[in-house]
Length: 69
Image 1 (cartoon, rainbow, N blue to C red):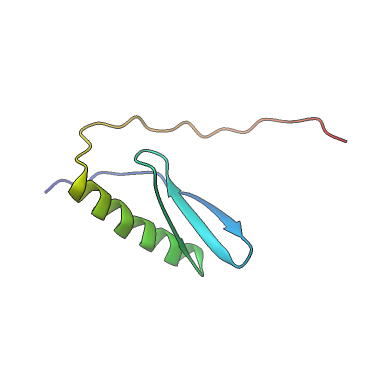
Image 2 (image 1 turned 60 degrees about the vertical axis):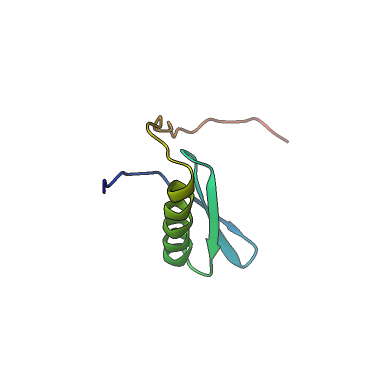
């Protein structure tokens, strides 16, 4: 069994936190950030049991500015 590192993008949506794994597309949620990430880990593990991913590209996280009125 191998250990792989994946990314988690977390954002707040009303009263819950949503966590997404951009490498495989798994998504989960929780009442706290920690709970959302823990649930995402479980969802990703279940996904990988069914769909074996051999190699994934790491996402690039950056920021950009937008002009708006």
